[in-house]
Image (cartoon, rainbow, N blue to C red; front, top):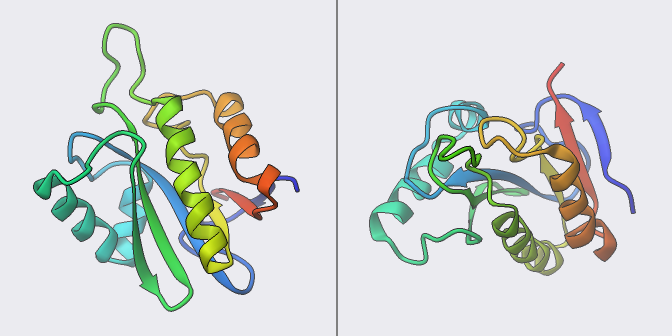
Length: 155
């Protein structure tokens, strides 16, 4: 199965059935720039749950994922795969191994809920990652397991 690329808004996932919107969060509890702004405009629950998770400290670690239902067929996956929010010593915030570990959890959730996966180009914006690397991780972890993945580029 291949990654499908479409022009559109990842907060309005296309297609039928259950859907997971995957995005990357940082491990510092910050929420307010990038794709999360669009998420918060549409639904308050992902931010609220993320902030509660951060405050609790319970398994709030790189590679962990919080699944937040926002509609009857849509769940937002808050995936912690960014260390801090800025480049430190020339190293961007993205943590590719955390992306891989988080996507493994997305696979399990997707298979249990018969859900397709939808996302912007995760990790390639504010997190400073290289899309080619992230795309390979998505292929390795999701599409090789026959999970339908749609990546959205804004118009």
